[in-house]
Length: 338
Image (cartoon, rainbow, N blue to C red; front, side, top):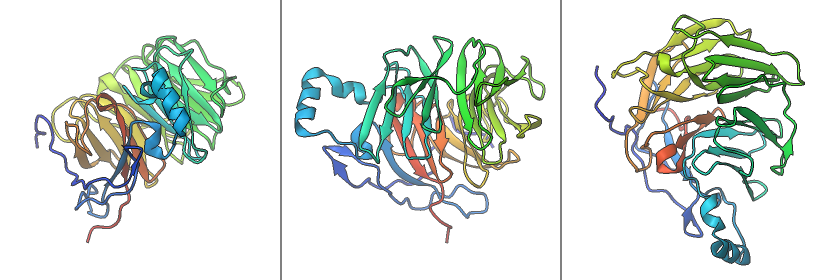
């Protein structure tokens, strides 16, 4: 079954509710029937979008708003080319925005927003390790770490020389930071505390080899998922970094991955892959069987334009809709279909 040139959006989206200072806040909206699971048990619901701090309830006082307007600060707080997303257990959210050479750090519970950017050139990946935010800077070939107040802190791992870091993921239970090095065709597993890490590498198309690996994700059982971009597939490794399986191929059919980008895993083990060529999200089971697709090219809710990274807290999915200058949020467990 061939995929249309630009797949039609499979989600019916309702009008978002709630406004704050002229900007829509994230608030749950129910679609008509956007089921994606093969057995019909799941629906996916559009929740909202993030473009600026006000969208997550972070407000500025009157005088602060006036000063920001005069100083031109407000524009720099808006997403421009969001590419990667990280979620902290305490509710904080970080968005790497290489278009602004910055990382946006949101703390909705504290009502706090920080913009990290003075020492970054091209941030492409973010991950939380406890209270520490780790950022991969592709152009500077390094990782940086920041504390809760966005202050520079020491990295919790010993980092090897990197050619072009492309993706980050943290296994908090096992205290490991995973880093992809796209130019070196390698994935590093770096233990917290500075011990010696492990390296998966070797350019090629065989099991366990890579061809420009980019985004990476880890599930609750320690399985590692790697976007093997120029092999047009996702590779899965167990918690001991042994190859388990791979899925995907170059093509224009449903389930093909001509331009795989962000990865996320929900709490039921579904693998969510951002497909940048078709501007869609593809959902697979743990065996690599396609369960469903949603999205399509456009600016409307639930559509994408060259999307990048993704993150999930198990239930909610966050997608960096890069060239629409926003992060879209979806509920993966809206409920059982009637």
